[in-house]
Length: 584
Image (cartoon, rainbow, N blue to C red; front, side, top):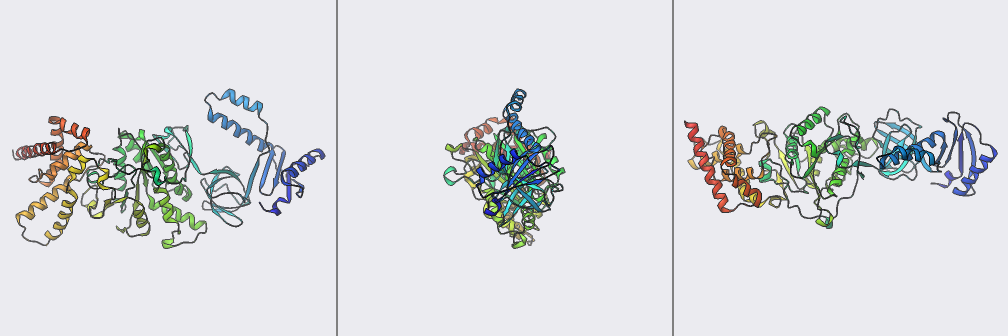
């Protein structure tokens, strides 16, 4: 606070204070701010209910009727929040409450528009602090300049106008968290929007928090099963990993994330879906799907829709991450989906340009890399002495015409631990999920697989790569030798096996059985269009006639040579029966 601002203390009221009141106010100002303060009174006819309001620089002491009512309201709110039987406590609070001389730093709005407000007079406000406007709207400090602040608004800016007063809260942006949020749909500020009533929070977590240090982490070596055979076999995801899902619009990116969420049923893993810039109708449909497959009970949906302001879309993934951190600190595992970070970057670009920041490449501000790195670095698997919980992130990024070398995709690829690249051509040819085996990668790899899965997958990735290469060359050959024809048939069978319907995740034992059977060439003589029916028949046979095989895989998490040979024998026998049945 500058020296010039301290020289004048202004007392506002509808009627002039009497001599005794004036002496008391002057004594209060001298005691708090020193002898050199100039005290004066200013008439304010529109002060509701009477009383006094004292302003010294940017600090305001509100002794008006309205101000005292707000103090009492806050005291009652604190009591009601902490206790269940609140009526006697509220009565006691009202009976014993006395107004306090609380200094509030108050500023003034100079400009407002497009969800951005410029504020002067709040000299001690800090970056990320929440501000309250005179109409009750909330905002957050995002720019600190020499004589003014740039503030983003979380509520509608229609009632905020030039000259409106703004108060500091001395609180950084945060979101309510707790077990009661499971099964609910909330906005980025933690307010329920599903019509099921208020949510009692257990705690209040800051939306921006430092990532756990190296000492607090442990290696990513525990699988997070998605139930999708192509992913769990070739690009495994571990608890605490960040695996990017990248591809053009409408190539099945959200479908993969949704299947992974559904597959966490019964696996003691909480799932959070953050929708950024999505259509509300799409999120409603996704929520209904989670409910249908009994996955909503362990899920939280955070929605910042396309119709919401850029500041709300900007804060959404951080709010979702804060909710995830609450569970991680309790030693629980969390899977969080950010859908999608392309729209998040666009919202941040919009906000930054409105705040007057210098644009860089593709008009994005210079700190857009830090925007996503400080979010994704919060995903981790904590060491046992720090609870042992984890946050696994599946960020989604949309590309244009498959261009993975664009600015935002390359940024996020460099932050994450691998990517699943979905290809248009594969998708439209019917390969679902449309994962490009050549570009996709998991940097954690086999460390995030059980021994059974690792042994079962074997050379699957290499076999598929050879098939894709041979497929290209075979287009130009008029006559193929028998060995090449067999290899092409084998590759086509593998691709057909990896074509998996949505909402039909495989268990680990089913995946191991299918992989061992396929790698043993059990499907070699079966027509490609008959493979889905054969796979169903094969799994039914194992569940019905050989349940001990699946039980051993689940129990031991390993694949012995004897067990592998047994699976291969049963699979080949099943294939013979299947072919015989088709011929008959």
